[in-house]
Length: 261
Image 1: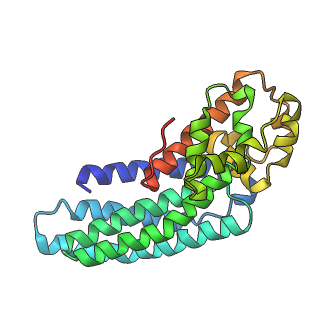
Image 2: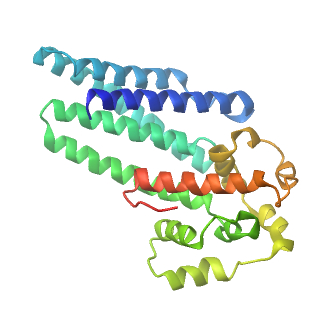
């Protein structure tokens, strides 16, 4: 990761911070869930790493890089525990943000070890990052598609069956398309009259994850308000298409398993 890469990391952290603050401002149950001092410390460590790699003195560069690793390790432990807590409590409003922060921290830590010429440690830490992130990403994406048949409703024209099946292949680790169709699609295809039962059946955990991803302003709002949004308007269709697009991005960016829209 080059110096420009660090700029991208900082930019993404700023975006994450902005989204978290917006969610915290509107959702009382998560107002005190984020330790902002940990976030500030994490961001500061990444900024120091960026400065260190620009230094002309190799000894100064290596000294600063060495100092950065400890707060990065602390951030990894904190956000891994935060993700697990968010998941186990059934909240899942901040699941994506925790995954993104963890990913950025691991990238920075790996760069630090490479700068220290500790190539074996860098490879080991990348492998450990994959072990930690992949199952959580898979759980998260699966949560977004608790009942995938809903995304094939007639109101969601433009969402293709192939996209749904590709995401199902990822979250189930099943490559047999016929089996996926039989188990997850054909048995649950319904008509317009049953759309209400589909929305009512979405678990709170999935609902929070979906809305936090594509419509944060609706998180914490009574689900009946969501139901009042008519299916024949473009508003809900845009939410569904946005969800499909975001889920594809999550899979492609963090799993190494690109999915096409």
